[in-house]
Amino acid sequence: MPERTAKQISASSPVTALSGVGKVRAAALSRIGVETLGDLINHFPRAYQNRGNVRTLSACDPEISCAVLLTVATVPRSATLKGRMTLTKFRAADESGSAVITFFNSRFTEKTFRVGETWRFWGKVRKTGRSYEISSPAYERADDPAALPALISVYSLTAGISGAVLSSLVSDALLMLGEGMPDPVPAELRERLPLPAAGAAYRMIHFPSDMGEVTAARKYFSASETVAFTSALASARMRRKKGVPPRMRGADLSPLTSRLGFTLTAAQKKALYTKYRAAQRDMREAVAVKTNIDHLIGATGGRDHKEQER
Image (cartoon, rainbow, N blue to C red):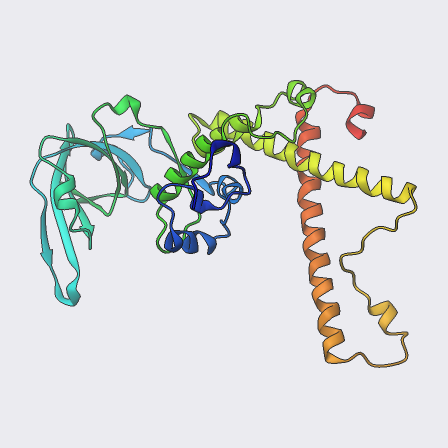
């Protein structure tokens, strides 16, 4: 099969267009609703970890995950326990003390960490006597700690797809689609609010430098949904002017069916129930869009009342 050129790549391209995504990984992504590049870049983070707030071991709250910069002090060693579970342990330290780092069923970490290297670990730090303990932390090599991102996106995942893998795939997808991806928000509206362009908003939501960028990106996507909703309303008004009846996608028809004078079959009831559930989904979407509209109206600041209503 010929390779896709840059011009052939779009948001509707399958995730298999990305390097490293074959049938198995594509099937795993499909379980979280990601089948195209558009699905991938719109699979937004559900939270962010502030790993830029680095603390010493002694300053960590044992009930809250925190980031620590530690230097590996001992060679990692693995042991196999009953039930074939593998434990890999080593010691790492900062100026306030040392901690035993433990990984479960991760024998490969024996070759990952070397004595003298500095790493940024993220996890819960527990005090154990005069020492500390961190179990299964996230980790990043910290040759230059200042170059590490402060905020790390947290995604909804599935078996076979780690956070690091998903983040890498999102980065590749954004690179392939480019900063010049189609922007549904008019330039005039972006300047008035103000809002970032589409490409910048996607970068900010997935790879923010600070929470200010997250806020700006969320504001953009609220505007994007609002534009789509108002466009659909305008289209419906045009159809009414032309005499085209609006398309009904589902409703509670019990007031009608109660007057039919006959009993619906099981198949007919099932069909009506399916349409009713579709109508419920549409209503939830409408409520969500209204919330976004309210947010945008509130964000417009000193605009007069008539302009807000319009």
